[in-house]
Image 1 (cartoon, rainbow, N blue to C red):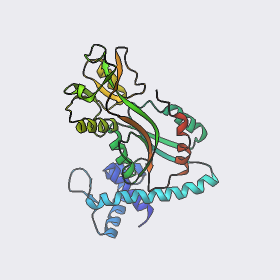
Image 2: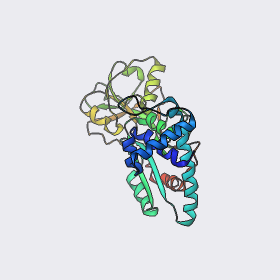
Image 3: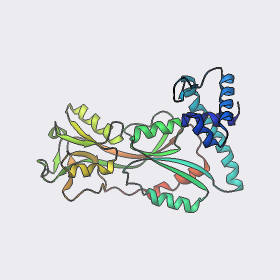
Length: 297
């Protein structure tokens, strides 16, 4: 088995198309098919299901995909180590982040990084899947690093460090019955209509668990895959929201209320693979991040 075989396999697995994979690899499609067939013969198992209109991974293919990415990452790390000595920092970083995250000055961070390391390509993915989707992409090797709002310890296979921790508050519009309160309890929020992010987002996990532990029912009537947009829906009278207490750009008629009787905290972390050695390019980025994390209120 050669690295080239794994490169071809990963390309087909990610594109789920031999045609698109051949374009990505800049080789003829017949060459890709030949390599995949040779790899399947060597492993003694089909890697793709070609019986349907679209190409799909088999169980064996899914098992190979993660290991193939690890192997290719290790090979790239070896190349990077040599290139760092000979030519300086080069390579590609796949960076994931949640949509609507303003606690990190990403444009400033990436602009400074590009100025210092112009030979590194950064592919930024703002994922609407939230923390759960970003964590899965890290584990699967699709991302090299990601900003996550972890409600628990990092999933197996990931390493994470906290960047900032902020309390969560209730957002209400000024004409809401609770608007004149200085503090509210979860029991005060029973059966209210809520605006929230979808299941799997870190803040949603924290809030759902808190209500379940308190035995309080709540109704999420609007789900927004962008934390920064939640206040806009509160402003339109579509519900209240529990959000991290940082500048979300609220309208003048929307304000936060502190929580009483429960300590809900939202944590922004920076996560990487716990099994893959970070490249020189990634290590240089990790060293810069703290300078671009905005202080919470």
